[in-house]
Length: 447
Ligand code: UGA
Image (cartoon, rainbow, N blue to C red; front, side, top):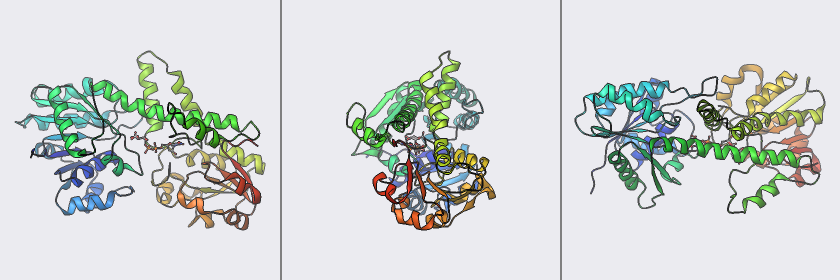
């Protein structure tokens, strides 16, 4: 049997922790270095520092059985105790949309310094989303300078993007559609490929071997394609609304049957949010412009997405006229269901605009209320349940399609609200059923 490599992970955010737990759940020894002591403490107690279905049980088992341990800011220690290091620190956006690579750079200094003390071949794998050219032009020189070693000879360097979705991140880690391995040197690409062959065996996904910069671009191109599909279908939704009898859901279902188009990511709604699509589309635009090309298609994808959430407020005004003094109920705050993440959540521009128009807002989310409090503070009321949220409201807007909202009946709205006006921003209700008892408006539905 092949000896399993020992793995270290730098940065215990979504990607880092899911990677670490994925490997530890399959019997690899994983050590993690995390700068935030609170996070590290929770991880060592088997508690994920963020909400992610399915992760807690696997993390707790990994910690309990001694396969996973997290250290506070100990990059050198975890690198020296392992054969292969995944770098999974954040790459936030700067105000101009470009990527802030300072965390990746500072980790490269620390990893490089550790490599100076390492006698055997070590593979460094960049998993953070970085703009094309970063691994080769920024990470490699820092590693070489700090270690005093030559990349490709005394240590190896790979770029291995992740495609995890929040809410199913652990499942996505253990069941990937594909594995992309960009490598500087063939030897380290082979080592990483062997690791994944062992990890996924016997259900091995396609493994794509590329250069470092192609791997970096694949990540941006994937997210840009998905964001484009969403802005495309939202554009069709906006056209549908002008055509009596048209319904974007039927259009999406029909076009999705064409194998060249496919059925996924054609749910029209209030636009995309989260920590990835907005940031990655902006970063790709900024990177492309730096290279002398303006990607107009991506500019439009962004513009459609920026306008889309405000349609909920427009619908609201069409029904209520002035919003001054009106009570609006917001169902769902997180950027998508099954997460408590509020980053770029569509609820933010919607609630900001409602408040600006003088409405009072009550909101309910099954898990995101506490993270939402850091965004809205005491400017809105946090309801205890969906029914509590819609109680005495003049208008209710579905912003995030949590499963429990599907169970609300037309009677629930009609009997609890001051005015029975429902705006389905995520197309979870049957227009036929809900428009009988309610004033009903929905994204992509012609009047
Ligand atoms: C996304 C990608 O799906 C992952 O493959 C990628 O790894 C990840 O970004 C990343 O770069 O780390 P995530 O941000 O977790 O994952 O969320 P998605 O499930 O992709 O949804 C993103 C947004 O698009 C949500 O706001 C969702 O409501 C919206 N969406 C999605 C739509 O409006 N319509 C759709 O048809 C699908």
